[in-house]
Length: 88
Image (cartoon, rainbow, N blue to C red):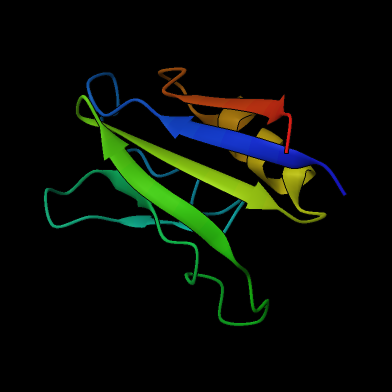
């Protein structure tokens, strides 16, 4: 399984929430914009590390769900989501 990083850039996010319908790890934050919750999927018992850095949300996962994250990124109209494979 690949290790991958999902970066959600909060500045361009405008709360359209197209990502939420592609990947349930994306959820609405208290500020009315998207964020990432590694436990946000009620079906999949996922595991990931989520942190904030310079106002962005960065999550690292080691599972087989990279394609869901890529679909969420592709659906984002403001290109606020970046998905990259990283070395473990």
